Length: 310
Image (cartoon, rainbow, N blue to C red):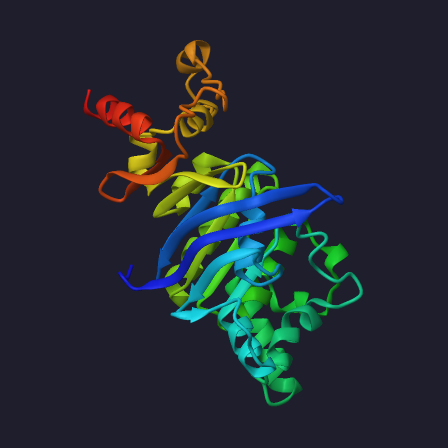
């Protein structure tokens, strides 16, 4: 993993108007970066803003405020069609629902080759067919699958098709938006292992969005925890699991089941109370240990530091 920052997100906000006087702050001022070759895990419960973050980064939504820089270039600045096309080739997305993200009227070959045609990466149909077949084999499917339609595949196979479609244009960065949540548990590990294998082979950088902390730990180098549009904690994967600081992170970790009957019998869930916070000042993102950041007030910061040192 390089020390070069491939993606830099600064004070990103995504607010939606839901009525004449009502605004939902889906993403409310989050800051983080992703290094080249890294997998950055973004976790939190449903509705916390993690998927909206991914969609705003890739420009499916225009940001309300803040900045997103990819390889030093402003993602949300004004861009010509050719600049947008170049950007879209570098950054791709794997969607949560493998059933809804594939056009049922298109064959697998048409789905995967769409990006190849848009970006002019193949010269003729023979080259296109060869490229699609190679991509199918890369993601663990057969080249004969190219002539079939999405409804002929299982959920896990459809997600592999979605991964092949993302890989087709040879991107540098992939946003995986809960790519395993719609799949059977037995298939989830296969898809995650495939993503890890592809990362090594194609020098990819991932933003891996999920609510399953145990799977995120397995694939991620660093993890950011989101709660109601805010980033509440960010640390290396091992550090976050061994030394969680924010009460919400502790709550998420306490919910992870382990294959140990004795542990499960005595496991105590930590219930997060969002009202149990110091309100004397606005919380800030503070570095409590090297590369370990927590959203807290000065008073909470001192209390968390004392807790870590004991």
